[in-house]
Length: 111
Length: 113
Image (cartoon, rainbow over the protein chains, first blue to last red):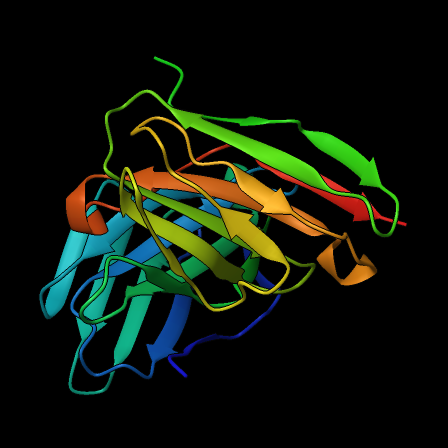
């Protein structure tokens, strides 16, 4: 059973701080990883994807991948109350085009 | 450009009833997927399709059926609804192999009573 594990949270950070969200995955064959943001009652929306070891930056968001440790993280700099949502980590299953999702981490950014 | 459109948005079914959840995409994506999401849980894959006429089971296919007669449409059929099928259902689509992630529909919230 391929699994993606995330701390369910909530992770509480003050406005302007850096939020750090983490996940681990079980399928060593996974090559692509995705972070989705999901507001309550809404559908997931893609924030970032990463394929290569190291960091990938997009605005206030930085995704980090360490394939040796099977670890993916998402850093959100200058967190805003509007970033309060559940963040889903997903891994592309090896040999398929399907994603396995973690249960998500709830982020709360207080003003 | 509508993206992925799901209907209905909400539905209440009685145990034993059947229904079809509709999903249509206008992005000419070959790959389409059905996931369900239960409270506090991640998304679980029900079925997926890599093109018209080709479907395959995901992690939780029991109690569901799909068909893919066109590139645009990927309906999900629930036969003999059970309370365990109470969930939020998301349809998604992607370019070949999903390398750039999925585009999700707005979801269907289904309650079986």
